[in-house]
Every structure is written in C-alpha cells, then in structure tokens.
Amino acid sequence: MNTAAIRQLIAQAREHERASQALSQTLQTRFQGLHPAISLPRENAPALLSRFVIAYIEEVPDVLDAAAEVAREAGIEDAIKPVLKIAEQFFQQPPALLAGHKGLAGLLDEAYLAHRLVEEVNDRYITYLGRPLIPLDTTRANLIVHRVIGEPFANQLDEAVHHALTVMLDEARFDKPSVEAYRARLAAADTESAWLRWPCLSRQLGVDLQFTARVPGVAETA
Image 1: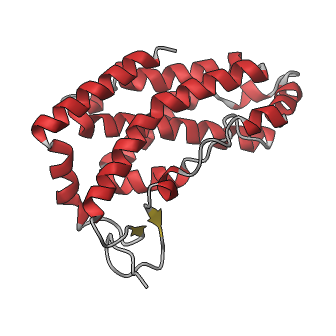
Image 2: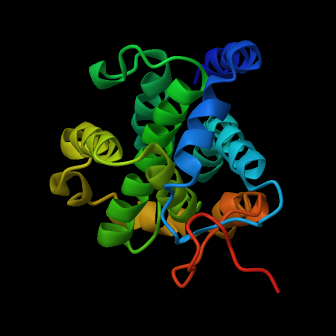
C-alpha cells in the first residue's frame, strides 16, 4: 500500500484550501440545501460540516493502512489486497468522471469512492459469509457525504464503485473450499478487536442522520 502518496495528496489539497477556500465556499453553498435528515448543532454548523468532510477524507489512508495490517494478522491478505489497491487507485488515478476536480472538494469525491468501496465489499461478504471483510461501518458517514456531494453526481460515483467490484467479487469467488476458512478468520476475536479503535465517524464529529429532523441541515436543540 502506498498510502504515503495519498497523505501527500491530502496535504497538498489542504494547502490549496487555505489559499482558495474552495471547499468552504462549496459547503456554504450546499449547506442550506442539505437533506433535513442531516442533523447538525445550530452553533457554527457550516464549520462543523467542513470539519467532518475533512476528517472523512483524511480517514481514508488510515483505514487502508489498518485494513492491510488486520488482513496480514488475520491471514486474509490475498482477499483484501485487491480491494485496497482499487481504493488507492481512486486517489492516484481517479476515474474520468472526476477530471478537473481539484483540492479538497475533488478529494471528497475520491474519498467517497474509497469509503463506498469498503462498504460494498462488506455488504457482499456479509451476503456470502455472514461476516464483513472489514469490521468497520461507514454507512452513516457515506450517506451524509452522498447528500453533501449531491445527486445525480453521487449516484454516478456509486455506479463507478459497482463497476469496479463486478469482476473482482463475483459470486464464483465465494464458491470455493476456502470460504469456511475465511469465515473463521473473519470471525476471530483478534480481527474484530483491531477495529474497535474506529468509532462511528459521523457521530464522533457531531454530524448525524435524524430522519425526523424538521429544519434542513439543523437539529432542534433542547
């Protein structure tokens, strides 16, 4: 894994943001139009949303490094390495639909692709093995970022993820004698405990989904 290159891209994007404030301006524009299910504290909500988005981007190399380490420890490196390489390539060789996207705003799209890839892989492993490959739930954070990116473009990114997995994780991959061995390794206590240091990102940063929220982008306070 060459996550050092991803970290360098993120550092460069943060420098670009300090000079341009492009991401902050984009989020300010989109803030009022966010789905009412996205719950934010009233005080300084746009800044908190910006903090969440940056943390979401910066979490990608950390998750990839942790996933590679867990895979080695659990003996499932051969299964997880192709997945991690695709997530890495989303940053280093973005798909054509991201052409021209720059700075943190551009990396948000790439981070969404990487996080959604992990989510989709987990869904497929749960379907066939009853266990996620990577015991990390990014679904809530991904739903929030989907709304921040906005439709229909976020749907196009989802389609890119589905396309990337079509060949790599087809049904035949799970129809092998080694499947039960994988299941046992995925269920090992050491594999699961290694992920306990990754709490729900959205809740950790004070951004949540609240489907009864009445005010767009803002949670009611007591």
